Length: 165
Image (cartoon, rainbow, N blue to C red; front, side):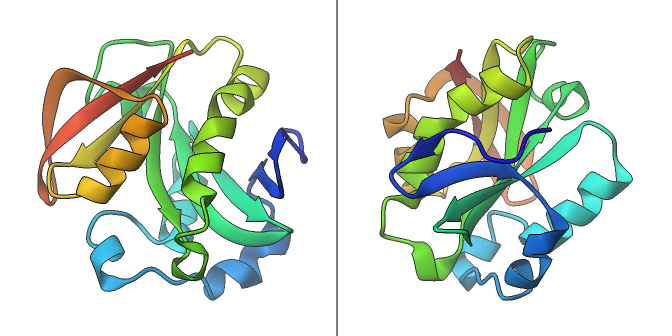
């Protein structure tokens, strides 16, 4: 898995590297954000335990600004039948970086990142809670669409959103 990838301004996506572990210890999510996503340290622990999960950092000038996991078929099949899809999960932006366009830029970089590292993938899906209106807006404005699929999560009903590549 490559190091440096596509860049928009000073934002880039990079597979997790232990050299960023210290930054993740200081990664902060508000209580509101914590109710909808996993802290990166917890998500990385799951990635180490379960094959098919790839942790990805959102870097802004080499600072960890955000994080997400790309999960293969084992994650996708809970929600959808496309075996050539990846599940975007545990997406977050550190509270100190919010309001700076990090989410928008990182999601703009996502399709080319996936095509480069997972050339067989033709779609990215994600699950977003009905109550998480801010995230719904960010995802939809980044090209994700609602095809009417719903699922139940730990915080209630979720929309399954899709981005075709």
